[in-house]
Length: 239
View 1 (tube, rainbow, N blue to C red):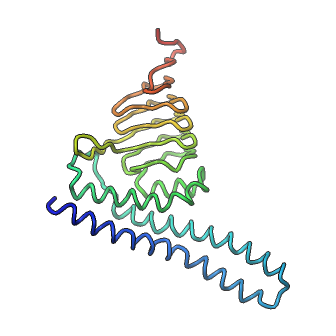
View 2: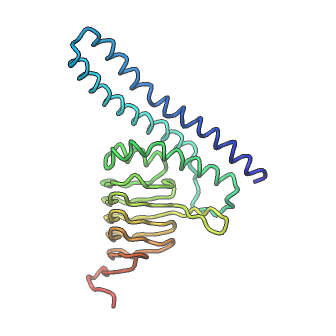
View 3: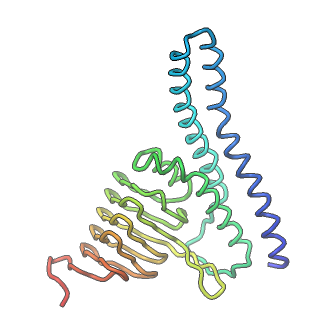
């Protein structure tokens, strides 16, 4: 892309303004609630008024979070790339698009941290492009590049686990799908990098790192940094 530095600086400035707009618009319903309660309780005693304003403050935060997810999720539905995988120069239009979606995801993260695991969080991840089966429990907000991630039925994603569908190498942005099968467990604070596949009912232990383009066969347990097989599907251990 020609004049990439100029485009990057221009878009960075526009994105900062857009961030203010998104959070500001998302705060409007809560602000309306606070103003309404403030006016309704004008004649009440101080402690009664403080109680109602405190409760409405909690409600305002809830409305802000839900509105942020709605706005960001709508952007995700419209802008997420629809491609099996990609390898493009860092200075490319796709990189700009990916970076924009990543920034939007960070805007939604504060409230997302409070709602995982829940149907609300899963709905947001789906809007951002993640394919999620039934009965999935996601207790981490760090499902990045959702449009590259597939999670099968009854899988559990542990707290603070990181799933990335991208890697930057040799001046290129590489996007590759991450496929997690049915009945899997991704341990807390583990990391899965792009191109990885977890077979059905496999386990990635906590704090493990599954390096890029690694496949865990069905039923196996892997752990460590980098992750390696520690128990086969038949219960035996590698020598």
